[in-house]
View 1 (cartoon, each protein chain N blue to C red):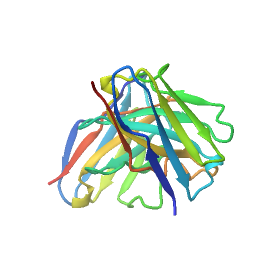
View 2: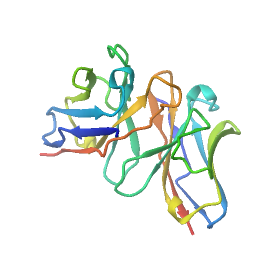
View 3: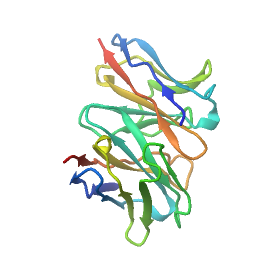
View 4: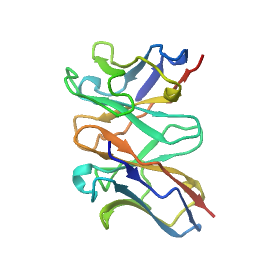
Length: 109
Length: 122
């Protein structure tokens, strides 16, 4: 099974910009991996922010965006807010099964 | 209003079996792919399984559960199941049911239940 890698933790200042990345042990991440990004706060179910690399749900704040960057999937948060402090997970599709990354704990400080 | 309600969790001994259910409402269940993910206490999300829409003829599994877990669906009851056999201590987790994808392109991983706790312990 492929291994999906994320930064274990990142810190961003309020109003600042941060990029979370998602890599694959099998090589470059492409749109064919259909990258998804999830936000999870303590005690809550995950919430999907981004699907298919860059598409947003109606509830996804405009400050979040998804892309491919340097062979990885990327989640960019521009203008961080205190409520964005959470765990963020990516998942990639491998022709049927999906695999989650280990998650990034994002601190807004 | 969309609802996904998981049930069937609880305490089970190692080597035992458990069947989780996820009752769906508020969307076209039969036309939706469904999925299960899990999260061990204090750990990250782990993708478990997904099943195709309609007759559920396609099912995929994560390596950690392949050969032990089986996903199925009953469209008449708007319910997806996860049959878990040969349970191990490391299967202990909250299991979340979610819609994997609906019939239109923007319906991707959009709904999640609140989870049910499975504890494997003697």
